[in-house]
Length: 376
Image (tube, rainbow, N blue to C red; front, side):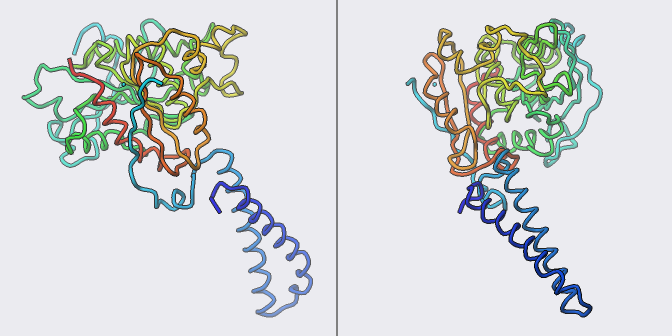
């Protein structure tokens, strides 16, 4: 029986109920002094609590899909995802005023303390000139950025987004984007890229779903206009759409796909890991649209694919046959993408909504991004 099956949950819940009933039934008999009675009481209490905790954990996992299988839970699923392409049916003064570097750190890679060997990570604050949004971020500069052979050359850049309510530090420590990018380049599977890592929650604790909220945070404008302009004005990265990609997981994945779809003039490629396809509306988001249906439609990726003229750009979506709640919607998204846009996918046999799954998808996703971005 699979980890997420209702049968497993039912069996464990029934065991918890049975053990609770047994505890009530046999407690008077075990209330006597003596080693056997004490051992019996301890055993019943421990067994009841363990099965109760297991039942609650299984219920939570079924609701949020943290793990998709027993192998995923115990870390036995380690093979990387495989990208499948689907055909239709492929440093400046202006910007520096809108970005402030507040710290520098070394990537956790061999030779990381030497920028020309391990690269550099800058902690910055990006101030949106148009949106008025201000957000902290980490900028990873690859070793090549500091090497004489690349002096004066520009680099492709990718925006990397967490889920909600994740922190940008998760992208460095939990998902290991700089380390993975470094390894992919060393293996000859990707070209050097600048990574701009942050969370989509630019107005915490509110989840704005990367929407320009009426009379509220203009999150879409921040990611589509302000961020690329600020980064390109402060670092040696290209300024054209073919120089820029965007990737994220969960809420960040939805944001990446939406920003890429609505702004192909800014981002040539966008990747959504375990993404969903229309804006969430719940207590964490508040009123995003203020009753305006055109704004709600704009935040619905399926609606855009069905009702807006096909745009350019490349999309990568990921899911799992077992353990992910977005399998059906992801297949629907793939079917609806039409030329000149192109769509690719990573479909794992098993995986959940968790870091273990995303770490299996990030290496091929970065390789996919690299192949679709240019440095000039």
